[in-house]
Amino acid sequence: MNKNRFPVHSSQISVRCFPVFARTVALVLCCATAARGADGPATGTRPAETPTPPAVAEPRPILSPARKLEHARRVIDRFVAHVRGAPDVPASARSAVERGWREHRNDEDPSEFLTAGVAIVREAYKNAMQAMDQEDFAAAEALLRPLAGDKDVYVALHAGALLARTLVEQEKLEEAEELLAPLAAREKELIECSFLEAEVDFLLAYCRLANLRYEEARASLQSFENQHPDAPERLRLPARQMLQELAARQPESLGEVSDLMDYARRRLSTGRADKPVRQRQDRAIELLDKLIMQAEERENQQNQNQDQNESERDRQQRQRQQQNQPNGGNRSNTPMQDSRRPQGRGGIGELHRSATAKPGEEWGKMPPEERERILQSLRRNFPSQYRQLVEQYYKQLAKEK
Image 1: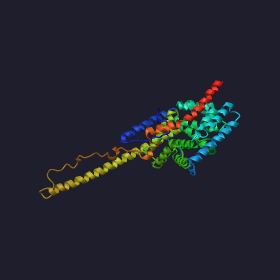
Image 2: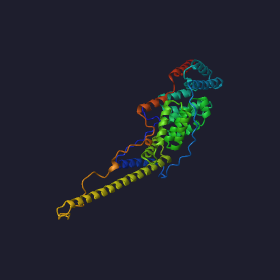
Image 3: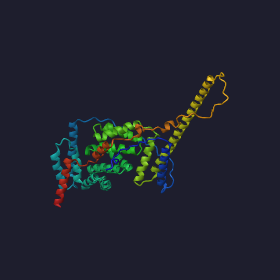
Image 4: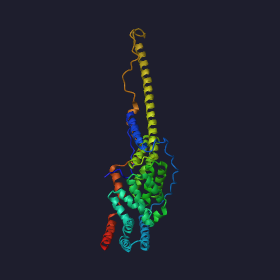
């Protein structure tokens, strides 16, 4: 299982010497050449400026367990009433949903019953979730695309959120952001007809960050923290970490170079060698050139300082030798070899130190076991107590046919 598919972005570079820069530049140039082959030369322009970030939402209160249970029951009551009155829902599906809700209404946390109910109402949605469980994301995407525009609001919301997740799994993050932005704007429907709002807001913030929209991502993450103080830990922890690292981010650093290159890699891996890719490759090369120049300047300055220090030491040594000579300080008939530099440490200095990436250059870095736990948590579509309900319905349906 690939543990890096979940939206976790790690950009850590350790630079030990100038040749590492050179090799990185060569790598970027190779990618850029491949990307330009079909479309001609890149424009060389920098990526467009980040649009004005969305306003940060006002904080919401943390609901007590009793209030959360009351809200969950109210949402599912509305769903069951909707199914009962929907003419396009088969009678067998209506009966299964109503019977299942009577059995599970007193569950400690019945919120995930809604997912099972939508799977009963739309078989394609159930098949898409099974494809997700099998990590067949392309098949899930094909099933979910038409459902995301379904006239049934419950089906459309759940299919849209699951479709966004399949796109993230496939690293199609621009498409995911385009889908999530209007979905997140349906705040009232998400609250009244689903329990998906926190996940939708989190995925939108992540996609904006991965797509290098730093200020929009910052605003989205702050809104997420304000609006979802009691969101699941699997969402709150990475959101808080990304915010902390955004606060420590240093523009035009190695972290930004890594972000730009990772963006280009991701787009190229999905077969896209378009203008945004070329722009970010060119920007990465521009930043690398600047960092190389700065490293050379530091090395030259350090060498100059060392030469000055060594010249001063030579002068002081000559003075001491003259003072210690028996002829009263007159220079010996054998001249000192002034042009010979005494042995000492080299002048590379800080350029050879390991430059550890700063916190802002380690987007969403988490231990592998934590990434895997979050991945599995997000992939979980059917909780065990409701999986049986859905399976029983479709088994009975198959017998009747």
